[in-house]
Length: 286
Image (cartoon, rainbow, N blue to C red; front, top):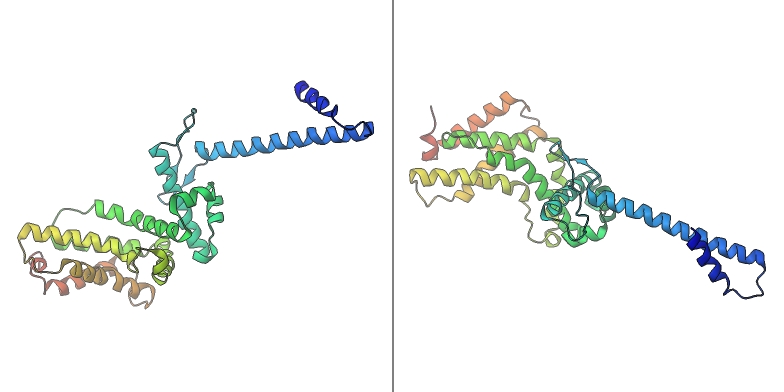
């Protein structure tokens, strides 16, 4: 403090002599107050930056678990890959919530940045544009629900695997947060030129891929006719197991959203399809 005051008096020696003493005091007081304000603001901004980068802000993600970024290296420098990956997941979680809550037009990069406690510069450096962030957030949300299904396919017949996967994807598609993705997926489909490589069917694409992997494994194991178009068959099965019953439940109200009703529907659908698919008919018990 003494050093600051002395510095101010040294500056006062440069004032024109015609200034009255009272004016000098006011000017000196202004210098001191401005200096204090600058230091307080800088301190607050530094504290906020430290809290964000050090991971003091924890957040419950869509998995229900709290994510916490590890403390940054006291030596500074670029964040580790682990911290960068956690920050990326955190941003996508927040962005998806913002897009679902406010819509594509209503959500802004500034609002997402504030909600995620990052800068707009961070968002643009990672994703380039709001549309690119939207596509990444939707893909992130879809993968969150489908990745566990793909990694927990049970052993058994091809028929059993397809019924299991179809039921799990159907159940996931009926969750409130997944229903909230519909409008975002439709927006991306309507703005395909802006969304780049995103396809209108991106919501179903990952589910179809899981079904196709089961079909490919079945063909490798039993040496079935390789001329079968597995990609078309996988899309057909996805529509039969997921798209159609989902519409019957949500839009047409012709099917109850109960475990028994869905299981019965999928069993009857599989029995019908298996009549034209020899490798599925062999797995059919009756």
